[in-house]
Image (cartoon, rainbow, N blue to C red; front, side, top):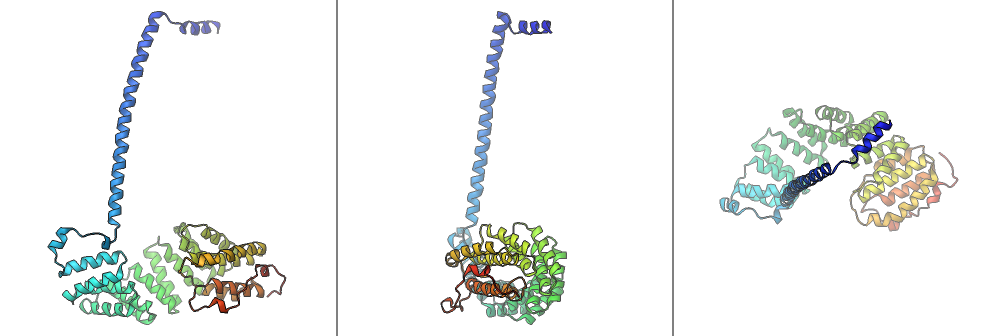
Length: 393
C-alpha cells in the first residue's frame, strides 16, 4: 500500500519537459473547445432563429386566414375574372360569410346567386342552412322544400329539412324527413343523433334510445352519443343505466365542461349526491364557465350538500351564492333549463318541506326568464332555514 502511494506521489511531480508538453496540449485543447463551442453556438443560433422565423410566419399566416371575410379583400384577379353578376362570385362570398357565422349577410349573396340560377339545388340548400342558423325557420323550410324539387333524393337536404321542422316544434314532420334521409344513408350518425333528440322531444323515448345506440355503434368514440343515451334512460327511470352511460361519456372526454355539468345534474336526480357534489365542485373550478351554468352548478351543489346532511356547508355556500348573484346575472344571458331540478326538488325525499320551499325560491331567483318579475315576488332567502329545526317528510 505504501509503495502504491509513493508511485502516485511520483506521478504527481513530472519533470520540466513533461510540464511544457502538458501546457501545450492544454492550450490546444482549450482552443479546439472554443472552436467547437463557437461553431455549436452559431449552429444552434441559426437553428432556433430559423425555427422562430418559421413559427412567426405560420402564426401570421394563421391570423390572416382567421380574419372575417368582411375584413379581408378578395384578390384582384378574382374580382377581375368573376364579375359581380356571376353566380360563382356571389356563391363564393356567401359561402365564406356563412362559414364565418355572418348568416344574414350570407343570405343576401345566396339570394343574388339564386336570382341568377333559380333552379340550383345546392344554392337553395345552402341558403336554407343560413336561414336556419339566422332563425328564419319558415323560410328555411320553404328553401329546403324547393331544393328537393330539383334534387329529391339528397340526404343532406332531407336531414336539414327535418332539423328545421324539429326546431319549429313540428316533430312528426321532422321524423318523417329524418326517416327519408336514413333510408338513403342509414349509417349517417348525425341524422340518427338528430332523430334521437327529436324522438325525445316527441316523447318517443324507446325509439330515441334505438337511434342513440346506433350512433354509439357508428361512432364509438363520440361522448355525446353516450351522454344522450344516459339522458334517454333517465327519462325512462333507468337510473343505473343513465349513470353508466353518462360516466362513459365523461371517460371519453374528461375535460369537456358540458358533459361534466350534464353528469352533475343526472347524478343529483338519481340520488347519487356524492358524485353530483364532486362533479359540480369540479365544474365550478373550470375556466370559461358561463354565468348561467355557474348558477346551475351552485344550485346542484347546494341541494347535494343538504341531501348529504352537510347543512352548515350549504349555509356557507348559500351566503356566497347570494352575495355574488347580482354580479353573475349582470354579464351573461345564456340559459339553463331548470325544469329537471325543479321536479327533483318537488319529489325527492332527501329534502324537508322547508328545504323544498327554500330551493324553489332559490331556483326562481336563478332561473333565467324575461317573464319573471322578481320585484313582485317574495323571494327573501334566509340561508339558516337550511339548518333550522323543522318537520321532516
